[in-house]
Image 1 (cartoon, helix red, strand yellow):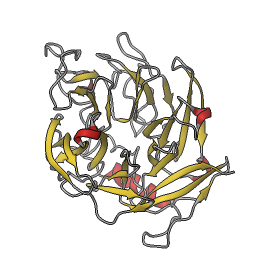
Image 2: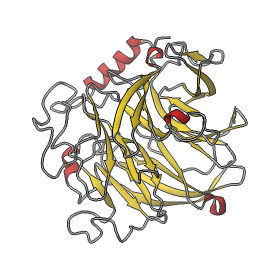
Image 3: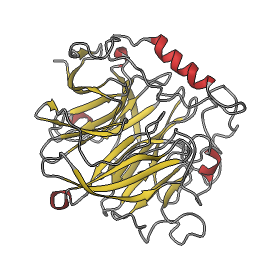
Length: 402
């Protein structure tokens, strides 16, 4: 199974040629492939299961999704899927319901903008609160925002929607971040991209470009945030020096917050996130501009963190799952990362970790299928699920082909 290379090439060329004079080419790490997994037009017969050369079977769970971005499971097993086009869809009892969740906020849907990640409140069982990150605004001024709302008992509607956080304004529709994760203390981590044109601001924690922020569930800032006094950084900033964080998980066993982010042309990173740390972008990087020009000669500097893993060439990482449960017991505690349309993308990446979180190896999964994956998740049934990065997207359940 192959994708239409001409379509992807044309999109990359169009992105590169549409920039104003003097600006680098637009980000291509998640160039959207506008064909389905068979290379056929949307609207054809249902997608069949796929089998990879390395022994995995991909069974469609939901198809015909418009740029699926994030998967989230409710306690009853219902799957919620954000579509970047600005909707939340439901998969219940193996069926994609026709109607999206009602009452969700209007998004700025353009380029990489739209709906992003979701998170359930730690007290969801009693308060039914759902959190959503999305692009808000217009082409002239937009940003990443986070809202909370109350999900109805049947999950068909979101009510009492309240905006709890808004990032720094920009006039670009690239690099939003948009991943969410709750920490054990009940605080909410939100990732923010640097808007592509504002990469230098990633080194300035006095704004939210290129940062990870930590919030209380009501949007206020925890008193133990590293810049809470506002003197050396904004009170919401948890870490800075990021480019575009697209994967985020809390690892309870190792007490570690893992994130990964897109580099430019090369230099994608997996990082351990700790309060107040500077992760280097763009002062240090293992990548170059899309046109090949040098961003910096430096790959390390005092006071700046080194990645746990770096990928050169890029894999275009998006989505990340921490493996747990009996179904994939031999991978317990490892990371599975989606890879989109990077030079070494269109696969899943298995990052193997020891009990201290040291990387002991990596393995590419299902690379022969050449499927770009936007998100990965472990369901309450212990199964591994992956969503493609396509306009006509599919969610697959992944099993061993036994």
